[in-house]
Image 1 (cartoon, helix red, strand yellow):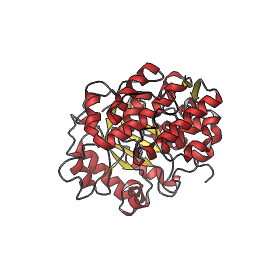
Image 2 (cartoon, rainbow, N blue to C red):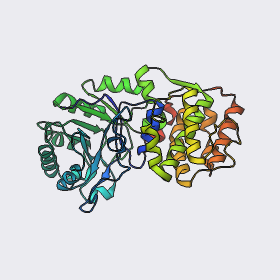
Image 3 (cartoon, one colour):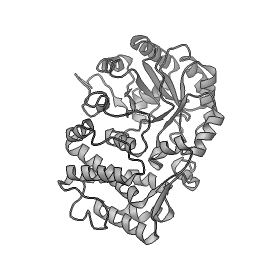
Image 4 (spheres, rainbow, N blue to C red):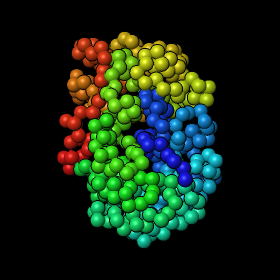
Length: 392
């Protein structure tokens, strides 16, 4: 059976696509990631997987340092197997089925957490996939149930005898969505009551919560981190070192700029981005090193704008801009990330910017006015009511 790393990036639809995965390996190099789900139907994919779905296993094989697990979502086991046939075990030893998405659209087609609404169908489907794919090939990501935690024991019982690669439990129900706190005691139930490699998903925000999870669920193999990495993209450095991440302010600004640039070049011409990764010019860990981010920023600005430059002055981006799509993805990340930053940066003004030049000009101005020579990125509990859904 394949042994997967103890910390992994959780799949988030529309978020942890290739540019985000590449950027995360530059910020803190997580050892493993799972792709956002590919929605499999009778008509799609027809003859091949999309080029941009899992390039790390195709065009970029062995060019990046993390393991990648592809994830599919479907309510039809035969369609899962048809899509899985495009990925031989030599490319992906493990393939995951999503039984956790809470979307009502998925529920209507018995995909995602909809599969959990029929325990017998769930049991038959997972058993069929496990048998067809072979021992240690299938991974399952699921919730505790649809309406109640009381559904979990019966769902879990259907998996205990199967030779799964791993079982990841997002410790909420479909009805919970992302509200409330993850019930880590239920994850421990799965880890202690089965021989499966069990991973926890939900509410790992940093070192303190990681320690609480390990104390509550000591038998888990590890954790998948989703929204926690949006609030702190350097979270894997923190979890490995046990210390909060601090960096020079210009390191932070150029790292954020690189995120937007990666999104832009991926939208314009993903092939050019792949070429740079293959050549080793992008994809190495930068962490909090200014020289490494400087090199990456120069490479990406030259790709996007045809002129290499750094964000060192407030007006350095003025003559140029990014597409609305790339900037919207930057704003989405910022809506989470600001919760882990010093108070001047968490103010709503930056969220109101409508274009990249205005955003980065105001960011540099705010840093200068606040006298922030260094920036600490760390979990702040005051924001948990918003991001853990506790107000719900």
